[in-house]
Image (tube, rainbow, N blue to C red; front, side, top):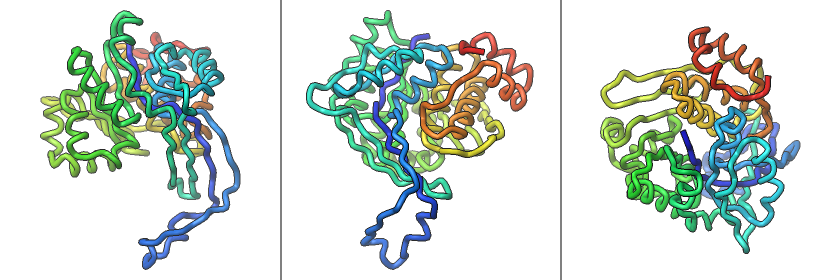
Length: 327
């Protein structure tokens, strides 16, 4: 199964604030906030939702196709992704702009304040999925993740026009999208991804109920934080999958991307929605235990030990043959 992931490619600048953001907010002054936080450390990491998802899929051995735009400074990042099993041949390189940048501060309660500079990402709208499909011999699924908004709309329309199944995943872009844009992006999707807060925002902005949205997509996948994920499909009972126990909670950045990497890999393996969700939750747990979105390493033995402990031997037997990473 050939899966392309369109989405942002960025460098993450991650900082930690030892206090709590809420302690610094004055209720009567929220209309004129002016704050500066003295942070403890700075980690510069590779990121972007498209690249994060592809990195995780590459670690699992599913050879994803990354579709996005980057700057001339992408060479080192490209080599990193290539080494970790990602097809980067469809990445558009801007002649003028730098690769996008995400700057984020996380407080002691794991709340986050972030800013995103688009840079070369704005040129992702120039990418045609037909060229990608022709190069790799066809596409079975395209995940349309957070990216240049115009690129998201164009990729969605091209998928519908060419009959390519697609997954809608608005993620960080949902805050700036209108109800009309969201309705356009989710209509006819095979999968709709969101977290629980985004789920409510989608319903509020579109004016559609949960049932109405579900009727327009094949499957609605809602991540529930520490409680795992819920998958709803028309005419079927919801599937709920919990997360494995965390050894530590180091950094929540990229956990949603990691879930999608595992879930999409499960789809590529053909193991069914429940098993795919379990793989996604396992990868997400490994990422929350690591600082940085692409700093974790998948070991087959370690992965299977923890997966078996949480989901049982039957589930483990169904995915073990597909897991293609070092022991």
